[in-house]
Image 1 (cartoon, rainbow over the protein chains, first blue to last red):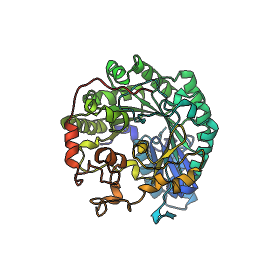
Image 2: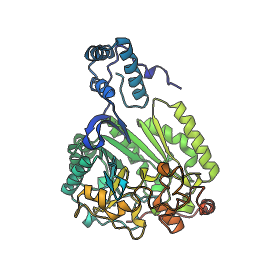
Image 3: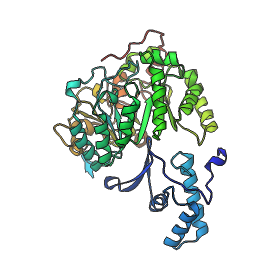
Image 4: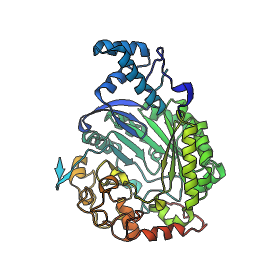
Length: 98
Length: 361
């Protein structure tokens, strides 16, 4: 039931959190959360690292390169994880793919 | 952390009822039948303190509501304080009373999200339901301003017997206004809605058709708009996990500062509510008698006490249990395991097209 190409992330996408979606840290809730209209998602360490790089300035390719270098992980695997996370968030209107 | 042997969790959301004043008269208003007076409303400085205490307690989102929150002239100051406390702030508004100018001021103050109620996709019907001529046109105009400012918009559509057939048109209206989220909220029967139950109650067939329509619309518009539906519990087999469990995930502060586990809790006799003027929010959350009363599962009777679902739906809604059975500790009678369940079907069948008893202040 994917709704066509609108949700597809490409190497030149410049993803960013839209207005009304914010990463926040709350001690009492035990860490990072993604806040959105009527929704709250716990954000694990990997999600936080990815979303912190979604500034609207950086391309997907550069985000993946950066993560692969920072965490000394295979680019292929990082790419799969990032695309999966970002397209899932875009589908829920929690991310602009740019 | 535990109190009285019950695990204490951190609340996630807080409903801040800034005022009970409202220009509309919706016959399903969730405000109590006896409204807090303007003279008793908390001032902006007190709200700012409550927001800071809420964030420290774990609250992530504050829903600025009412009444009509825009009836307060100091609303920008209140929004700013919520943002400075680190809270995600969501304005729940009728949009009547908002102008493009004060909306821009709220946006500048750090508003995160706006939810506008629209009473029907048919403008004349919407104005009739709201008891306010011209309301629909004003709401649509302000909704567009919200989107122009770059703020995310949710349209909230309350559905009941006269408008439930227009779910598709409602979703299309929300899309045309630029909303990214729409709530199809079936009336819940508390407060003014309980008073107007016979006029508002849909038929089972209407509800089933509306549920089917929502499924189709979700598939059709996936990726364009999020459709959330609140199901009408009089036709359910199991109760809703009301407020995610009593004193577990959310709290509600009234205009005059009383802190409630849910907005309807004051209908339950004998509960003692504490006020933010006298206690810190953390103390209230942990120790106020009203929050302790139904927290956890120790208060339960059968069939809830030994039910496999007791930690999932928490026995349903305490207010509804009281309103329909006279006992706030009873199972919510919308549950098919409740000995009072047959009564719910009788109440749902009691439908009359009478004139609305509009909410009055």
